[in-house]
Image (tube, helix red, strand yellow):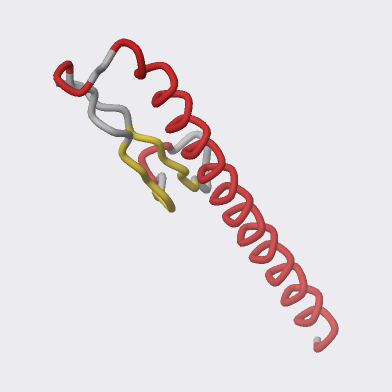
Length: 85
């Protein structure tokens, strides 16, 4: 049975995707016919999608802040190294 997996990955070179580093991953619930009650399924699916969507957005923002911080620290180090010489 197929299953959906959400992931946030960092990649340094777009031309080299095999060097992708997964920074966050979440498996979506497995879809099993025995667990699907027609009357409730769409409401449950909407609830899961909303919950997971907000979780993904939080993680994406955290990873973006980490990446921005990394870039700013590197730039600061380069500027400081230039001042010493």
